[in-house]
Image (cartoon, rainbow, N blue to C red):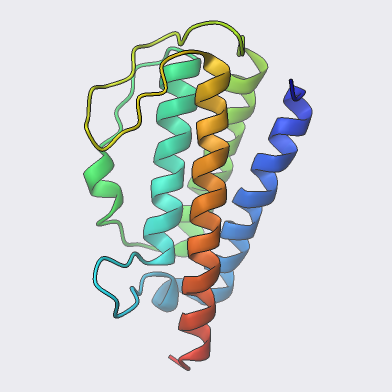
Amino acid sequence: MISKPDYLRFVDEQLEAMIRMVQELGDDLANRRLKAPGSNSPFVILTHCLGVMEYWGGHVVAGRPSERHRASEFAAEGEVRELVQRARAARDHLVRDVEGAEPDSPPRSAVDSDPDMPQITGTQGGALLHIYEELARHRGQMDITHDVLQSAGH
């Protein structure tokens, strides 16, 4: 089993990379989507990741009520500065959630039955692993989106 500090180091690597990319792009480019159908802006990608952290860490692992509205994450737009502040606050919440986690125990809150959400219901550790999985997946998506937006000379 991975230690909690090691887990957070891996999470931080993904989250900090996404924060750096939206900061590099600035408000205009961070809010742009690629021309490919169904693409998401870097702002949307990071907003979605914050929702993942809040739901799976705060709700499923820590047992807090969730106010997440997943669909609105994919319509998000705004200022990078504010998004970075939200990301830092979400990271602080996740640290507390991880510190209080019992990885081998069942989730403290039931997972919603939304068909778009995976059913990771076995353990808190499974929910934490899902957070890392989503951050790593979306960091890769943002890497590509970031590079295309920068190279297009917008």
